[in-house]
Image (cartoon, rainbow, N blue to C red; front, top):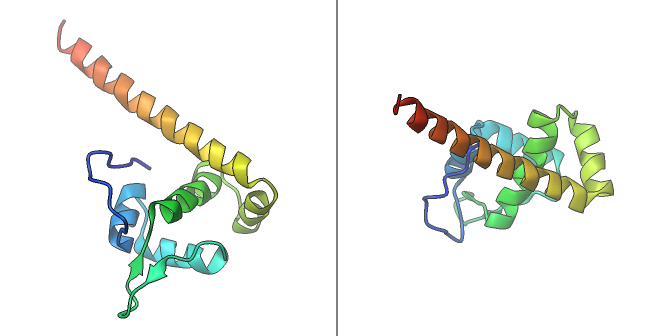
Length: 115
């Protein structure tokens, strides 16, 4: 679930860009749209999905619950409905920890080259 932080901030992202950010298939994102009613990306005249940063944050919460923590979709829906802020905070914490892990790996690699 690595996020490309070097990319400039845009208003809308394509389904392909979002799938690449999260390391999932585009079809999974389309499926999650049917399973989570609050996830509704904007669609243009030619039915192309356009995700906002808020949509991406919602997808990260779903990803955290389903892929990282192993919740079934029905349990993830209940969790989001019952504790929206807690689920979002949990996703933020995991993203931060993954960033720290990646930085530590880079430091370890640099230190390994100094020996």
